[in-house]
Amino acid sequence: MAAVYKIESDFYEDSFILIALHSTLEDYAIIYFLNQSLQANFKRTKEDFDLAEGSSFSVYEWEDNYNDRFWKLIANRSSKRTVLANNDLFLNDHTYIKPRLIPELKEVDYFLRIEHDSNISQEEIIKKILTAPKIMAAYQVETNKLKSKNNLIF
Image (cartoon, rainbow, N blue to C red; front, top):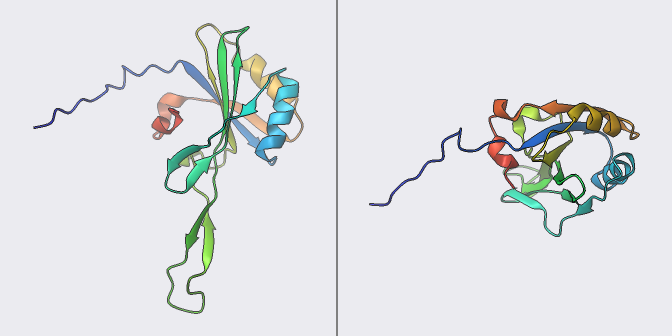
């Protein structure tokens, strides 16, 4: 009989803050403006984050050695091509569905995850983010209230 090990929820401690971003910009454009407003150096990872079959989310990261922080920006939406299962005029037609990384926050476009070991001023970071053009809103998300917070472990 195989042993089953469960990780208690208090064992996993959130050592990161999560900031939700609302923007109409594409991921490359939002990174350009975040690099300017935060004096950052985000770069796209070689591989996207694959959550499920056909659902991949673009990821950008930056290791801030000066402040000992690790930043990641991930898109909350992905496009997935599927075949319609109708037996009528549109047989074998394709459609696109848009899976979400965090389904309960489907209106959010991007998540900025900042891993840190020291005190960090979320208000200061949010103020700098909001100076970037076409970012309509930015706010901190309480990760302990999310049902799908396990999707943020990447």
